[in-house]
Length: 384
Image (spheres, rainbow, N blue to C red):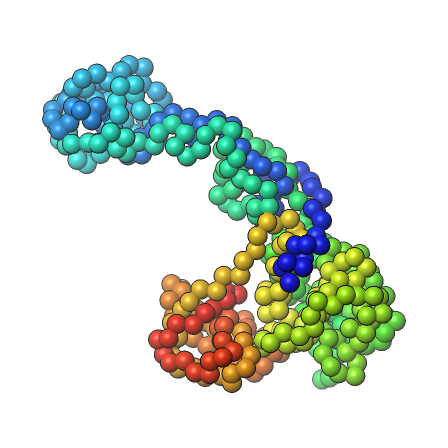
């Protein structure tokens, strides 16, 4: 699926944003070091700048240098300069001994042995002037923002965040503000998807609910295909009133797949119509959330200009025995400990059980070809 999106996507449009608003955006230009980093050799410890050839032994302290200053003299034979972390290394010195390891007596210190370059970050040890540090296609995190600030970039070119249309379907859906009858439910899927889209760096646009009527559904699908990506919730199962696939087929859609062997989320449609990609996600809330994280998020990130996507599933130890019916890979609500070492499956009542998911902070990833695990076994988890 990722290869399909990769082959068809065009480079997104670019825009320039301020450094304060760049976090989470996808970089659209290479960022090179504007000078050596560090610009001068610097100390990485509080201590004394010395000549390694002079220690161990007693040496004379001829001055002090701290971060933000430079030492005007030069360290000669048998001499040292007291130095603070981050300060430039004085001329003549080639090592730093930690303050904790010396004994000071007035203007003299007794220093232990030192190796050349000890506790020194050399000039250009981190990056050379002109070296590309940040490449296009990278989503900007806090470290990237620090690098942009370090290189003097107050504004930066990023790819425009993709517009993602969200279309919930079904006559049973009523607005969040409504008081539903017993046979109705509030439209929660549109809002959970909007939250997931925003978290992944997209711009969600919630459309009106599509009723179980072909003309109305087609009108809203065509409207949704005006966005960069269309997410449809519901209407993709095999029921009499599940008409989404018929409507898409009538629009000349190309279907890449229409079913996946996972639970929740088996009826999942992915394709392209009118030149835009779409996902037909199952309508039960947990199914909608899970299938977005596993499938739609990756496609959205690629369309946003991101050069690579990943779905980390670390291992954790089960807190109790666990069984399931083999045959499908299952993503089940679970609770991961704060140290991510142990995971506990949570009781749940199926794909509509949103309260169970609010108690979870992860999904237990249960392999299709294994039916039973024992307490202490390692099992994959997907963070929520």
